[in-house]
Length: 254
Image (cartoon, rainbow, N blue to C red; front, side, top):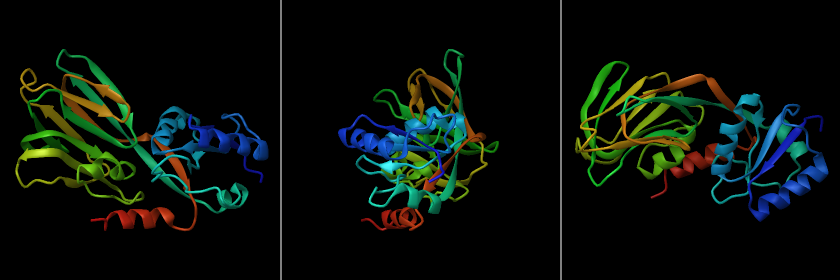
């Protein structure tokens, strides 16, 4: 195989064993010289690799050596030299989060999965939601609210009863976390270019935090979220439509 590979593995014994075997067979190219980065681990490890290595502008072919592995190829039963040339690519675009805290500090972070607001105390969060400059919810009373990418729709978004979005869909999921008011609001699907703003109401009584994948910021006042076209990654998947089937299957689990 002429494709130059760079292997990265999580700390588990299974992943480390696979790493040694693959390097012995295919060699190990420097990350700046490779064509494809091959993470060996679970979904969380893949997400770490995307954050750390997206700047190299390489494609990622993830191999599941974790528990769920929803965004990973499932086995090494066939040779990588046969599978990678037949794989198909899906582009994931990150969300960019800009935050203003209650003391006036500003922060910025990226998320490939989701941006999520959470209450910090026993008090529910009260949050105003604005989309593309139009106020859509004057006051959401809930444990929190998140906006998820298609990749993140099968993660925390799914556990909060949000919709599953196929990876190539130009949509984002806006999902409440344990909502109390409005009583019947279950969230919304938004176009991928939507600009979403969250304003925390009564920040002293109801302190709220926000996270963008691995980055958490506490005592927030205002959050602006939109898609970032400058931060994107290419994921490679086996051509047997296993990912599409998993997405379809998840929607019928009862």
